[in-house]
Structure formats: structure tokens, C-alpha cells
Image 1 (tube, rainbow, N blue to C red):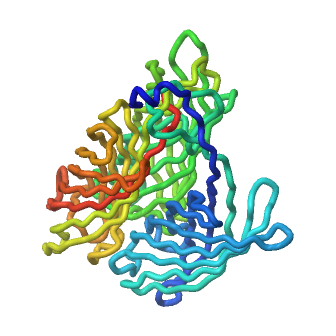
Image 2 (spheres, rainbow, N blue to C red):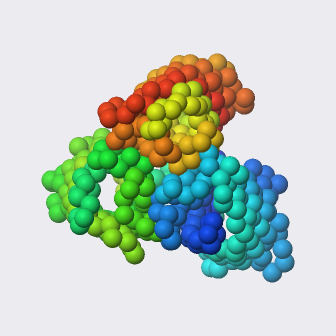
Length: 471
């Protein structure tokens, strides 16, 4: 919430630009094996032609579906004549999967990319070197990229709690965020029923009810620990009568998935579903859907079912009021698991790299979504997805807080059972700048059922606060 002094002045939106992009290249694994590697990123300007932000890579063809690597990208750009530019970048992250020889999971990727404007987009050709230093992968290759620079509008975090001035959407433009619980009933020789937990983000819909989004989920039951998917959505929501808060929905999704012994082969999957949702008012909606998921070029076939609960992050564009500014914290995190049990009966430490998105619902309570992947400790392919809530002291130079989260984890030989886990962290933070903090945390992670994982966790986090639109 804002302090009384801040309430005397109307909030003023800050304007910036972000770069959203996709890429694809084919890398070489040992024994001359080829794997298609797709990428997605969001980069923020640092000044003087420097950009940085999160990026994720995943297997999109070959035989390693389920390989995912998340981390950070640092890029320097150089303007060239006639609309061209040169981008020199370095990515570092952690992950793995599908029994790829990634060692501890650390991936480094250096690249030089030449791009040119194509209408509102930029397209380019890249040369890159991908290496897993503790594994057996080292490959140089050409690739393709497509990127889009779009506005990024936000407020000072001390404006939280004040009415939001008109002027359009803020942040990444996400209008709704949902938590999901679902299941895949596999068909064919593999008849497992795999339970999934995840999250979905939706952008503002068109007047006709068409919307786009992105979703991610991981296995939490059914003997498929380590399965993970990231999909792009295209959907349609139709409300027959404004007097009845019931809507019918159709959704299609395309993306990457694999791990946990799921038969996705190269990793590309698609999904279609029909469902219904109810608007409970005050920005809350819940729904149910049923459909079908298939592997593109693989034997994956499954019936799907899902229930979800969503909250609006910003009012719809046709809403009579613009809403209230909310405090948001975006973080990069390093975690050290002191005693992570492995499926072979041994115990050892492991290290993960992760991102956190925290949204405050009042001055002291926040909701959190997190993703972490191993980069050291011999547990390459171990990944974690978490959702939950936390409490914190009011914004100040020194802050304290605690959070409790649940989710799914698997891969890397870690004894995470069916995949469902819980994690708790208590933290203390010290301000580096007015809007950023370094935080030290201590806590633990534990399998909820079917696994031996139970380890203390130490955490180092850098956090950046900003004000975004709210209800």
C-alpha cells in the first residue's frame, strides 16, 4: 500500500519497451543425434543498447521431448545501416530431461544474430554455440529468430493501492491468471492416469471473445514425475446472456512437453478442449474443460480433464473503472538443496536457478508462482514448479517474510515420488535500490506422497518491485 505522502499525487505511468521473441535451431548430440531446440524470451532494456531478461529453451524435434532449460539472457546490440542490427548474446541456465547427457544441467549459449525489420517484427539468422560444460553436449549451428518490440507500461511500486489512471494495460498485458489441476488418461499400451498441476495466463480478449494465452503444467501423480509442458493457447469464450454469469469455452493449444516416461518423442504436442466457466464477480472466475491431447509425430494420445480458478489481474478493457494499482515483485533466485535424496538411495546437494512472480493482494499478503531448474549437483533435468502464498512486512529498507508453496517436481534422479512437493521459505531482504532488494532465505522442501525427498534449502534472491494494474 502507498504511504500517506504518496497518496497526495496522482500516479504517473512509466513507459519502456520490451523485446518478445521466438527462435529455433538444430543442435548435435553425441553419436551424431540431432535435436530441434525452440526458444522463447522476454528482454528488458538496461540502457546503452544492453538488454537482459528470462529465456527458456525446449526440445521440439528429435527423440528428447521433455528437455527444458530456463535461465537468463544478456544481449548487446549494434545498429547497422539499412535497417539491420547485430545482436551479441550470452545465455546461462539450468535444466535437461529425456536422458540427454546434460551432466549437472548447466547450459551456456553464446550467439551472434543478424536481424532486419519485417513489418512490425524483426526476423534474423543466428549463429550459436550451445554447451553443457558438465555433460557431453557441445554444438555450433545456425538458427532462425523472430522478435517483436512492444510497449511496457508500469507504475512506481509506492503507488500500490491508488486508483489506476486510464491509459491502457500494464506490464506484459496479461489480463487473467489461473491455477489449474488436471489429468491425462493415456490410451494405447500405456494406460497411466497422470495428474497435473499448473498455471495459465491470458491476454485481454477481443470484443468477439477470442483470447490468447500461455500455460505450463507438471506431473504431480500417476508415476510420471518429471513430465512438464509449456503451451501457447488460442481460445474463444461466449456468454449467451449477460444476465447469467455462465460462459461456454473452446481452447486449442500447441507447444512442447515430455519427460516422466511420457511418449512424446520429439516433444511437440497439441491439445483441444471444450468447457464452461462461471463468473463469481470481483474478478474471480472458475471453470471445467474436457478434451484431447496428442503428440505431433509421436504416439501420445490421451483424454484430458481440467478444473481451474482464475483471478483478473486487470479489469477488462470495457470495464467502467480502471482498477487499483497493485505491488508486484519479479525475482531471480538461486537455491541450494543441502540433502536431496536420489532414487538410487544416495543423498547429495544440488543447486537450482529460478524465477518468481509475486503479486500482492494487500500490503502484507502475496500470491506467488515459481519455476526452478537444476544446474549443478549431478541432477540435470530436475525441475520444480510451485504456486502458493506468502506474508511480508511493509516495504522498507529491511523486510522479512515467509511463504508456503505446493507444486510438482521431478527428473534428474531425485526421489520426488509421484512429483507432488511442498516448499516453505522464511526470508530477510535488504534494499539495493529503492525498488530492488537482495534476500536471503532458509527453509525446506519435501515430497507430499510417494517420495523420500526431504531437504533443507538455502536461497539467494534478487527482487525488483513495480506497480501494475489491478482490480
